Length: 474
Image (cartoon, rainbow, N blue to C red; front, top):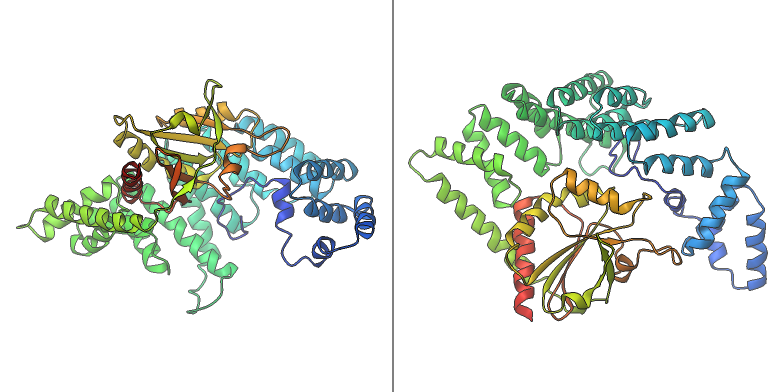
């Protein structure tokens, strides 16, 4: 998270907070480069008996030794109960608690213990938890207590996205209030070409992203004329024309009868595999209005086939041939399964976690892929929950999938008590999630995919091509 703000990740761990201090750290480099074991031992002992900052340096040194690092964190918390490490630990406990009511209890304790600390992140966390609990009044209560205006706007944007799923009027109220506050602050000027990233640049991008969200809510509410006003400002004001911006503006234009202007934007989204059903319907309407003597459905089919052909050519270049590690995970009943259990089948592994935004963003496309191959006995999808941050990860994962109606085969890759690592994801050398692997029937990794950039149609076409190539490789 940044102060100006995209809040993609709020789950700071104590180790993450420390890891962020690693850049250009001569003291840490000196420790790592010390050749004399006796001198190194003395330096480490001195740090262990020193200040909190010195303990933080020592924890960084032991960062790749989880057991030792964890014990030093606990030492720091015990020795400096009002210090940064203690605050981070309490805040992390708050972030990893599920319900809003439980978070609120922890928040009040944290506020009493650390009254002078910046609590903006905690305010957001409680608000977001309440948004998921469908308690809109509590959402507003906690968002409104965030002191930093730009941070509050970003927090409001994310909570409004959650509220939008079940209460459009409430989401509209939240976004309208923050847009009015941002307008009072003033829209930062457009940066000069080639300028380096700055807080002002990020503030400008955040403002237009908020306008785009507001237009999305208005479109869903059927307020097309007002939606066009904000969508147009967001699209024309943003230097980076994202898929979300382009699609929303095209849809708003179409809904307002401006079909000539809408058509190229909607066509672009379809050709790139970034269009949802609403955009496809709008495209067909706009195309028919602009070209009354032509077949909109036939042209849509041509665009989609062109997209699929392009993706197939790109996927063919991504083919690899690596032996997959003989991983083990547990199914929801606690049964251990391994790579050998899927011999002869093409399997898709999807490493994910409930706290991972991009993981969850990819799930609509993954459900489409699962549905496509549900009658193929030689294709198997394993949705492997890993890197858990809660005490009951199975319950957490099942609850998320059930509440969103995802029909996935869930497997668990929980942390090993001795090593402090999650075995399966570690075996595959994963550094970030979502991470997907397509493995053929001979146990060879044929494709790897990291992250998710959006576009359900394109994602399904890409994964389908990978599966079909892998099936033929056996």
